[in-house]
Image (tube, rainbow, N blue to C red):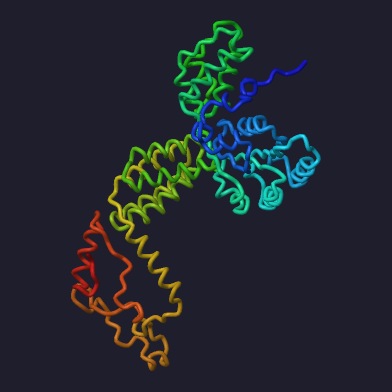
Length: 426
């Protein structure tokens, strides 16, 4: 007795016109659509989250262009499998349009496995279609990237998923025979997270649970099927970098609401709270600095507390810290200062420390004027005296230029008053 394929497989499109969504890359006039129509295919990487149609698109491309088609999964395949496909492609003259080698999860190939594809791609022995959920610029070697077009697939829109539901209920040979109603369609679509496979699996699960008609897929049933929202989150995938980037940029941009939203999204997706806390410590110095020096103290305390407390309570600590940092005045003056100083050190690594700043710890050093003419600031009014601390080669160079923001404004005023025109603080 043959097993009935799952709904997602039964509804898999066989023509380009049947694919729902991804109009940005397969719409009329778009590059990929033109490549398919002309049959002039080039090697390509399909990059996008799970359930966005990467495998479907690869199979449709092969069918519509009459290409020989081989499919490998990078988890279970290696160099020998690649070589076998290349040899097989040379034996079959029926496919004049060429041979497509589709490699799912190509980012899981190591450097050597990826480089094994280069010669065959370069010679046109195969047309490579690689599918990946990770940013290709991070996960694929440069020589392979340079030989491939990159097409980015996006999570399916609400409208696309709504159309997919209608197609499933009307066209599927099993579901079309049942009386299925979905009064809470919006919740079902939102919890699917733009993933067509997740959506169809949820519908099929509901139909299998309720054996008699009508099948009412309501809010309670949907919540049972989705024990937690499908956040499509993987710490090793591109979404990890996208969310932490959005989180940091929201704090830098003084938007506590956006910051706490991305924080919630990361935590619900299973991100390590310690990783988030460490990034907050860095941000406190890089983006707030002396505009609010307490920010670093709070962020460091947050890291310590998160390490000791753990989840779920750590989310409260992270929320307090993130919203405070987002609300602080901002300055990257300290960050810019160390960057500029490092640049000078690297360009002129051998500039010596001025003699008057070196402690004369031996008689010989005293003889050679080490420490001579050094002025001890505490011997002067306001504990300050004008003298040169930088090497002669860098005289009058300024790295730290405080802003007018927060507490840094007072720092700027004090330095301006002390150095009285010797250092310029605009």
